Length: 120
Image 1 (cartoon, rainbow, N blue to C red):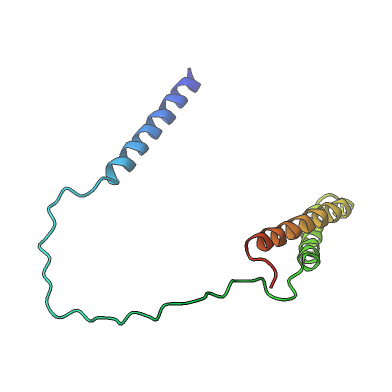
Image 2 (tube, rainbow, N blue to C red):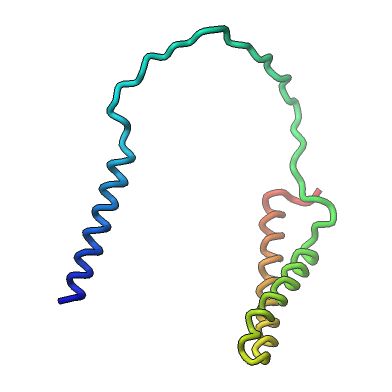
């Protein structure tokens, strides 16, 4: 019976929170005040049209090996620190797993950037 009461209160709280959120998100019912404008509006000259845009490229030296190496280094450090609570022995597998995951994430980030930006 206690679980039923807890579930009922949770459901009622969720319904109340949803109702308050939807109710507060509604537009205001008060009438807007009259807009008074005084003064002049400054005009801004239009910029010259761009005839040919230079494509965005990845910076020189940004290579797959660099990103994978940096990711592996960060992964080794984080994996080693995460494995330390397991009597120090857990740091070795943590470093291996962290390094592999970090290298994979670094290589993936380079592949995503290369797909969108390309090498210049």
